[in-house]
Image 1 (cartoon, rainbow, N blue to C red):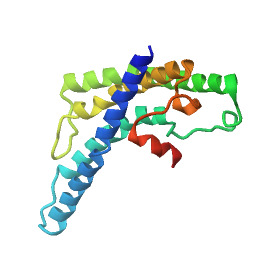
Image 2: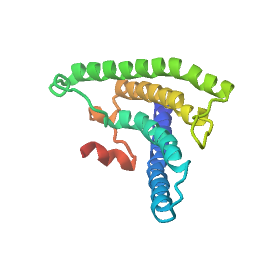
Image 3: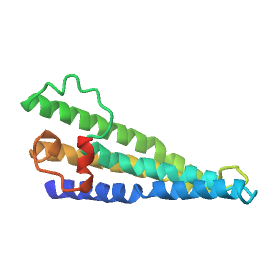
Image 4: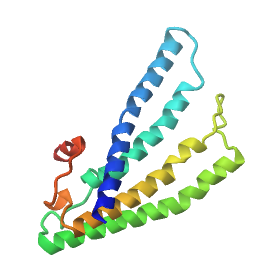
Length: 179
């Protein structure tokens, strides 16, 4: 189970590393819009909407790995003072709640993507792109979040989760936790 857990974390680390570059695409899209609007007097109908559609995957693909890093906002009044088995139990409860949230989100998001695809839903804007590709990232991220929560639970049970003083995370983003 531990190799599978590490594989899920490695997958999410890779997606996180790839997704963080999407912010540059968003900046370039908005820069193009500003330049075309104010210098060329020819605003685009697609650049702001495409930037919005790209922001979804940027935001969603970072979540599962941030769960692993402990980068989400947490109220840790009790868990900060806990030690030993209580700290492990609180961590496991939090991970199982995260997994439950991911499963519920997956349950409700997947039919919406299918419906959007089957109806040929578009954004109803002047550009009017299909929106199912952007919506597809919600159930994908929910699945990855669920898998990461379960992978971290396995790591906690094996005593190798970095958040509980176990094995180190080898990813370059580990330094984010200290910030």
